[in-house]
Amino acid sequence: MTYSIDQWRKKGKSFTYNGYKIFYLTEGSGEPLVLLHGFPTSSWDWHKVWDTLSQTYQTITLDFIGFGFSDKPKTYNYSITDQANLVEQLLFYLQIQHYHLLAHDYGDTVAQELLARQLDRHENKIISCCLLNGGLFPETHRATRTQKLLLGWFGSLVARMFSYKRFVISFSILFPSQSRPSEDEMHSLYDVITYNNGHEISHLLIRYIIERQQNRNRWVTALQKAKCSLRLVNGLDDPVSGAHMVARYKELIPGSDVIEISGCGHYPQMEVPEKILKSYTQFRNAYPSSNNIGE
Image (cartoon, rainbow, N blue to C red; front, side, top):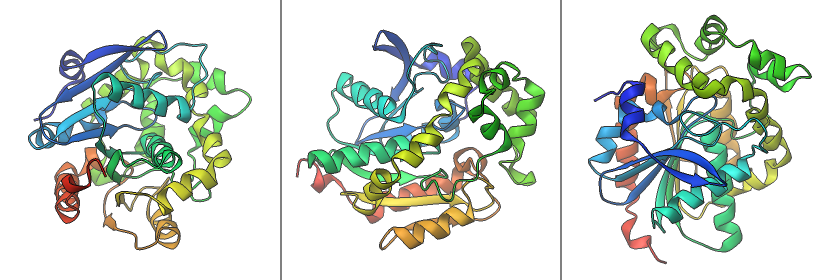
């Protein structure tokens, strides 16, 4: 089943983080699976795979602070580190100690920080991690024109000038023509981004691109030395982090497990949800994990 954004919002709950209301969903039973969304969208990105995953796992997702239906303060120090703190706080709130990760884009970077913390703490809380298209390596990330403008001196002005027409133009380039979102989907994505005037803080959220550069060694090492099973599933026709990023991944990650999807752009979970579900199921079946819990 797919969900409209109104249906998605009504399914969700909220908890408080640093005094702000955070939107999250959790359904199903089984081993916990945490889904982390990308920039500039929201947890709704997962709606096409949600029900199927929830039949097997306790699926958990959230809107990062500043995104989707979570609060979007205009004076806040947004960072990947803080978003990782938020994920850990939600898991503590839900009393979850061991979990699997499925992440995309911005969520990939949060996942890398969580993996780095696992190394720092000598923990085995993250049992497996599956990554979709994202800027895993700053040297291969090809920022869009809009992203570059948001990072510039007049980023706040660019954010305020955000419109549906501008969104469609900038967002469409992330997809090959055959898998581009429908007009209804474009409107839904735009509505989630602009919910509570979220577009006005885009220039603050986009700073994660700089963080990737500053923390490159930490976050690449987290992948190279990951203490859990790891897979990359990548849409190759993504101009931002497509085939060129896959090539770099294979260079840097020993014994890499990579699934490459032709004819797919930056949002595989929305473009080819059936292929993502199949690949993720194969991944989990290939690396039985329950025996690792608590080691």
